[in-house]
Image (cartoon, rainbow, N blue to C red; front, side, top):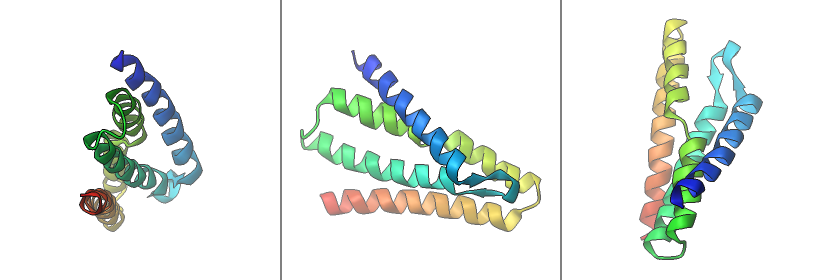
Length: 119
């Protein structure tokens, strides 16, 4: 049954991630704000959902739907990696360093703050 919840959540997470990327990413300018936003928001939401699961506020089915399915599909390491490599290949080294650094730091810091505040 959880597989179905993961699939449904993944369906909607992937669609929203695609939409956010279409609206905010500007590949010709080497700007990938949509991917960064999806990763930071998805990490933050995942932290909130994890706290709710730990405290039995949400069921394992809702965790499968939103935490594993939705957040798993909404956040994207593969697209992030492709975009960073594209910047490097196009010799936009400073942009690549900023993109990787900010994406990583904002995602980790937002998740850490939510978990720290929630404990």
